[in-house]
Length: 173
Image (cartoon, rainbow, N blue to C red):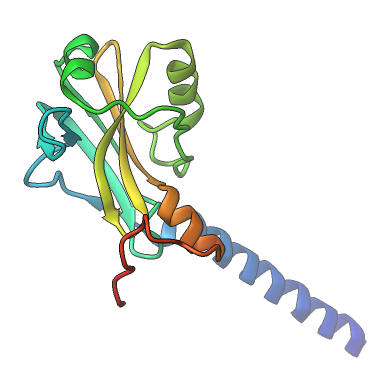
């Protein structure tokens, strides 16, 4: 009889731990973010600095637990032709998955549009956090998506490789 009680306690504890882990991973750390005061930024080809673009219907989520958990959606009236002439295009970028409850950001659909050429990716901000760039994808019909991506320095720093002179000094936490 004692074995059944101990086994039951273990199963209940495992179920509670599993549910808690699921909740924390999918919901717990995320919070909605207001639109930044400066709006959505893209790096200008001419000045090599981030400049705001026109946007509507901005929605975003972020988490303090990781610099790459940021996701955002918006709409813009700017054409892809004008954007490619004015802002730095970022090549070979695949969007990161967002939690299923953040419905406006579907990484598979965004990746398919990028692959088809109906969406382009731009550099939004370099080193928004150490080793992390903000990437902005905009579709031909004006839907926009934002996420964070590790840059070369971030890849090297976080996997333990020697960073080298090309990367800036990592700030103290």
